[in-house]
Length: 191
Image (cartoon, rainbow, N blue to C red; front, side, top):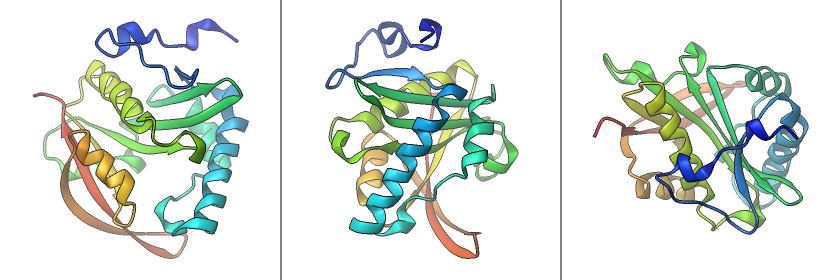
């Protein structure tokens, strides 16, 4: 594997090195497509059996492949010894994914997706993925990083608030002929 796609975490998160159970963080590339699809399938399967499947809206496979190759999309993965165990995806200026319409005259990064496999939850991987995405958003001169979270996803919602995000408002939209409600949360990167 090409070493240039790995983060030097010493320089990424204020000099702190984050490792969890032999895991490390790296930027994902198109070659990670199959693993990302497998993670998403596992999450969907888990939600069908254990919780409300509306907590997570999966991204289409062709869309994932397209997004992995874009410079205005920041995919970060958590590499475990046996493969990727988590990932996040942040958008910078992609109109169809933007939450910027909720913030007047601000440059907004959209922290769109964060997925952690069940066996790796509880290790603050969501927080670390958010921190890395926030650093990237600052590098790209964003004022705000925003996200949506299911009103029923208590763990993710709590994590977002604990990580300094503020609740803005609830929005409704339709995906695949199904009404979805999400809470918009954001963090001011200029403070």
